[in-house]
Length: 345
Image (cartoon, rainbow, N blue to C red; front, side, top):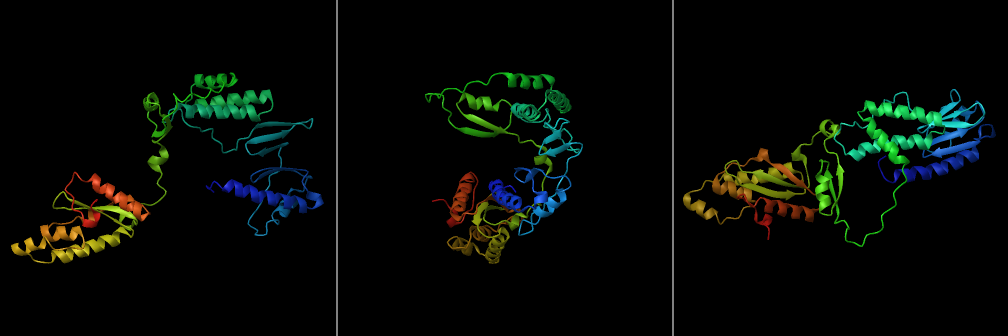
């Protein structure tokens, strides 16, 4: 599920499966009609043979992982996908929209923070489905009334529904001729949906694609537990000094907690030394393993280890170095203390 290859893989398997199943089906339950969409099948067989055919289908797959269930017609009707197929007294069929008993007619609310053409799309989809599936005019009128009532409960004004229906009846406009390049778009800009923002970009020749950002899911749903930042690997990190505004930026491919322990150990060893004035002056030429150790030893400052944070993540080592350099540049306005290996050349 979720992979672009899933539908292709399913269809390949189901093509093999249905060929094998129909070819080996017993004569008493061999289907007269077999119509399939991905893994949903509509079939016509002899009355009372549905269970026997289902048993046969469940034996075709050698891995025994595929299990079929069946539903028989009721009151001369049977659902298939979102279509309700009904057999009339004269033997002909009529098609209507099928809605499950749990269906609530809840669609995108008109007051929600979405583009207007998204809301128009909801109306168009329901109207198009009515016109393409429902086979009889009487049922179309009933479906139209149902759509209008459902959309009205979702806050859609009557004029908007009427507008979509009227536009559908109009002839489709002809495709514009290819331009000579003067009006060619300068590119596509994807933005969070804010009213009237797209007009500004349009004036400057940019096409825009807007997407909603204030959603209930974004505000409420957090399916994964928050990870401890110290358990982050392959990251660029920042450690502040509590005694001054200086900050340290580094990168590591290991867990941040491991790298912090090393920094802290080096800083503790350096700070254990007692300096006289002469020794302190001489220590400025001493080489330390990290800039934090040097800063602690020469200034006797306190490092905010508990305030260390991840400011970027990157799995590729070379790209991570580049990101580290960019972050260092972005902090140039602050008096950073940076190790020699971290300085941008």
